[in-house]
Image 1 (spheres, rainbow, N blue to C red):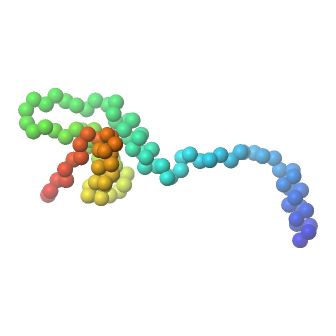
Image 2: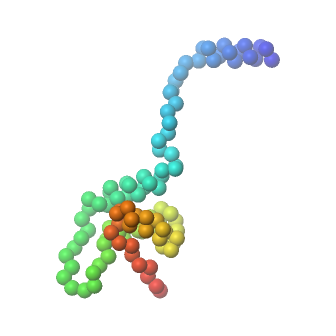
Length: 103
């Protein structure tokens, strides 16, 4: 047992620091936040708007795409994703919450 301890102490004295450990800022705790930020940064510069002359006002195409991507990211239905969509609307990430379509 003493021999093992002395070997271990010799190894630690001879070892060199290879990589300094740093705090991981890309943890899973902020994954959803980063997803929403990247989603908006990617879609907002794109221009999907077309001039509408007649008919009922259309829903914003960006809002539809963002809603679908959030539903897909969560892997949930529209009803289960509504709280996230409300939060996005409160934060100004989407301009309107699309109504649930009754079949």
